[in-house]
Image (cartoon, helix red, strand yellow):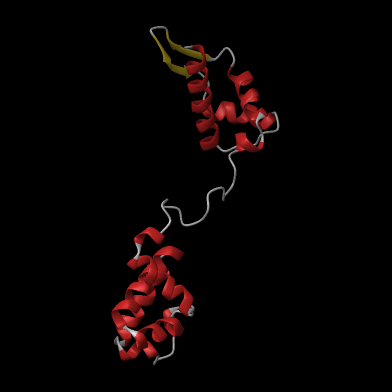
Amino acid sequence: MSSCCEPATSALHEFYDPDQVRLIHHFVDQLDEKQRRLFLGLEATRLGHGGRKGLVEEFSTSFGVVSQGERELRCPELLPENERVRHSGGGRKCVEDRNPEVLEVLESIMEGHIAGDPMNASVRWTDLRITQIRAELDARGFPLSDKTVSRLVKKTTRSRSRSKA
């Protein structure tokens, strides 16, 4: 619920004036789950027993979330070591992971159009434009954005130069 729709009085108004409560709502809305939990734990520690109840009511959360935030602040070793908010593996997979054949098709399109520095095998380029490569990939059943094609071209030219070196 947004801060404009909050009741005029809540348990937090015992500790903060209405403008502060509104600002805290704006701030908390910008935090991810971990940051929100830690902030609520910090405020609960600062406010004490009555403050915990006010935070739970005001932010529609549970005592468990607030308590976990307090525990994590007291014992930082309880915090996850990595900086991720969610477990790894989420999100959309790369096009080359979903369709490994796209790299082979890309290489066949670029065949004969790759040049490089004879003195430095890691310096390679193509004389085709990204839009030309994208149009050819699209014609072969791989509709991709210019940005994705550019990333794949860089990946292909780097892997080719490393494998030949």
